[in-house]
Image (cartoon, rainbow, N blue to C red):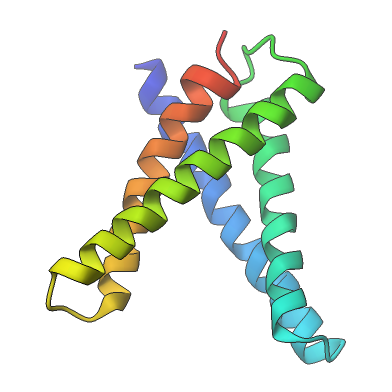
Length: 126
């Protein structure tokens, strides 16, 4: 039952990450007239920082992993999960005759599940 509660919390944090990322990108592009690439990178960094803090403090609050060790593990988990999802997207793009956008959606679902498990059992393991 605990894993279901954590998965729901992880989803809530994920939604907040998406909102923060989108707001930062919009403010930088529309309000500050920044370039798209810088806006995107800054938005994603803001979302990742939000994700790390809320997942450490709320989703996986029983974890004894320290802040520094947790941050390093979080970055590793993100990098591995991101690379695997992108590899899946490229694989699907080469093999499925559908709009590539849908392959990215499949990749996002794959990433979300994989990253939750990586954070639960690696980054913030008890």
